[in-house]
Structures are given as C-alpha cells and as structure tokens.
Length: 529
Ligand code: C2E
Ligand code: CA
Ligand code: CA
Image (cartoon, rainbow, N blue to C red):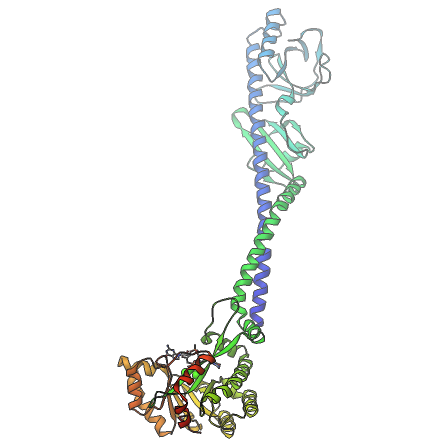
C-alpha cells in the first residue's frame, strides 16, 4: 500500500513536471531554431545585396576601363553620370591618378582629392578604401573600389539598410580568403567573431553569440550574422512564458489521469473503509431448502455493496481485497451486526430457521470475530443451531487454532460448515480432525451432474465421505431439477441455488417464508442442533 502510494506520488510528480520540462526544452529549441532561421534569412539577404553591389562595381569599372586611363573628358564624365544614375548601389564613379581623385560624375577636381593608402587589395587587383569622407559629400562614409585608375564609391547603407529586428544583431560583409571584414554593423567587433576557426562553414555556437554565415565563392564574398545570446535567452523566456500555462494544464491533466488510474488501483481498500463508514454494504439472503420437502429452512447471508458511484461490485472482488488489506474483520463485524439484527425477525417468522454467514481466514486466526459474534448472539438470545459459520478449506491454515475456535462456537450452539468443499487444497485429514457440522458441496460438482463431466465421478465420493464423517450436506448452485433429484436420491439433505431462489433482500425472504405457511414451520425442519 505504502509502496503504491510512493509510486503514485512519483508518477504524479513526473506527470506534472515532465510537460513543463518538455515545454521549456521545446521553447529553447524553438527559439534557437527561430533565431537560426532569422539569422539565415538576414545573411541571405545581405549576401544577395553584396553580390548585386559587387556586380555593379565591376560593371562600372569595366565600362570605364574602355575609356583612356585617367580620362576626365566630357564624354567620360557623361558616362560616369550615366553609370551612377543607372546602378543603384553606386554613389559616385570617378578617375584616380597618383593616388588622387581627379574627377567624378560630380565634376573635375583641379587639385585632385588625395585618397591616402588603401586599406586592402583583393585578388582581382581591386584596391579598397574603407570609410572615406569626400570633401564634396561631407557626412557620407563611403567605400571606394579602384581598378586601373577608375574608382567606384559605394554607400554601405545601400547594402546594410536591413530592417534588423534587434539592436543586438551584428551583420558583416567579408571579402576574400581568408575573409576580411569589408563592412559591419552592430554592437560587436565582427573581426573578432570571424577569427573563430569554423567561421567558413555552417552555424557556429559561441559562448556569447550564435553565428550564421553565407558564402558566394564565385564572388569571393561572405556574409555573417551574429546574434547575442542575451537577447536569445530573453526571447526563449518569452516563448516559455507562452508555453508554460499550456504545459501546466497538460501536466494537471496528466496528474488527473494518474490520480484516476491510481485511484482505481489503490483505493479499493480505501473505498471499502469509506463504504463501511457510510453503511453502503447490506446483506442479501439466499434460501437453503430441505431437498425432501422443498421447504426453505435457512439462508446464507451474502454481502452486497451499493456504491453511490460506480457499478455494483461482486464480493468475489471486494472480499479478497478486504482480506489482503486487513479490512475483512471490520466487514465480518458489520455482517455479524446485520445478521444479528435480522435473525430474530426470521426466527419469528419461522422457528428452527438457520442463517449462514461467511468467515474468512483472519476471522478464525484471531479471537475478535468469534467473540463479537458470540456477544451478539447472547444479546439476541439466539437459539442453538440458528447460526452457521461457513469457513473454507483454505481458511484452515492452523488446524489446532481452528479447532479451538470451532470449539468456542460449538459451546454456544453455533454450527460450522465447510464451504466450497472440493475446491481447496485441504487434506482430508485436516478436515477430519476438525469437528465440523455441515459440508457445502461446491457448485462445480453440482454443475457436473447434468454435464456428465468427470467431476461427477468425484461427487459420490464426497457424499460418502460426508456420510462417514456424519456431516450434513448442503449442495450449492443447484439450478435444475435433474441436479436436485440426483442429490436427493443420494441422501444430500439440503440445497441452495437459483432453482430455489437467488440471493434476495430480507423482506423478499420473509415473503417467501410466509407463503410456505405456518403449518410447515410448526413441524420444525431446521438443521439439528
Ligand atoms: P460463496 O460463499 O460460495 O457464495 C455462493 C455464491 O454463489 C454467491 O455469490 C451466490 O450468489 C452464488 N450462487 C448461489 N446460487 C447460485 C446458482 O444457482 N448459480 C450461480 N451461478 N451462482 C449461485 P456471491 O454472492 O457473488 O458471493 C461470492 C463469494 O463472496 C461467496 O462465495 C463468498 O466466498 C464471498 N462472500 C460473500 N459474502 C461474504 C461475506 O459476508 N463475508 C465473507 N467473508 N465472504 C463473503
Ligand atoms: Ca458461503
Ligand atoms: Ca460456497
């Protein structure tokens, strides 16, 4: 019982926490996947723009390359203007001589604008200046790309004006191999991130950042998007916040399912205890008839459970459960009390009537049940022979102890019947050593009478044995006249079964006795004392 309770608690706890744990895990995975997808899409878009910008740069440089080197004539300036207007990423197009910008689509610069040393030169021979501010365009930080005296100015915003979701996202365009940061936006130093060893391949999880790269080898370009983990955790938290209530509901549903399952498994003894307290149990009585006269001379008390919720439960289920959980003595006491209340009513209706009640092993092993029974019988001044205690063979585990208890019962005129005879594994010697009064022939032997089954070969032996031991016999489960005839012919005195009546409420039994008439009652066909 305690083990099952612990198991139920563990199950309940798991049922409650597992969905929450799963939700948290799921939230973090979902958030991570969403972040990766988001970063991937930003990196894709950035690469698309970078490739487009590069193509425009090369297109412009190629177009200008057809004019004489360093030419600032009107047709060349006009070409520059055309290119500048037609290529969306370009801010300006011009000519360079001796490290100075001498003209551009904006006009000629007599002195020339010194560009200073370049920041990088890529394999195609293009020189790059980053973050250049030209005097005729103050406030614009441009990137310049120069090849063979022609120069193209690009405003990084054209590439970078991505509507980034978070302040904590860093984006970068890398050029060449090993990649060099051409331009970056965001709170962290992209150069530091791109030093990571696997920056050239798929997503990279750094302690404080998630990195996603996209490559265009033919354009010698790489883009990188870095998402800070701080922001990621905040978003995971928000995701979890949405999922947690759902997880809690799922957890509670699971707990309810576990509780229901364990209630069904665990609580039968609990339900029995409660049923006893609420007096949900009552007795039905099954008539026992004299086979010679067909008259009802007694009854067996059989316990019924009227549960307020749920289907009626057979004693075949709740009696073993009560036996296992130690509740059977409380049940027996309950049965004794009802039987002691009803017996005087039955005796008033029919003298010599006898009532059988069922005892379990524990009722015989200890004194309590028998003491209780004898006390009640004294109170109602039950005549000798009016009560029969039915015990089964398997209940007699300690023949000596049982013998003592049986002697106590006999002292008070209570008879003892051995129930379900032939089904237990009792040795005849044990039974022979006990002072029994009645042998109840089990229904299985009675059933065999009609079926001509092998068991029917055993029945004559049981009957002979009962006769030898001078026991009265009650045949159980008699359902047909054929069975009744057979039993009568072989000297079985009493029978009970559906042929004579199913277990019934007290009032029905009293009605049955009444219809038998007072004449029969006065002749006294009860069991001998
Ligand atoms: P049992 O003592 O052998 O009781 C006889 C069972 O056979 C009863 O089932 C009864 O309804 C059924 N029966 C009687 N005549 C016929 C028939 O002609 N045909 C068929 N098919 N069945 C018949 P029930 O009431 O379900 O009781 C089952 C068992 O539960 C009893 O077997 C007895 O071992 C136990 N039991 C019932 N009430 C009590 C009780 O108050 N205390 C204890 N300790 N055990 C009880
Ligand atoms: Ca019985
Ligand atoms: Ca029986």
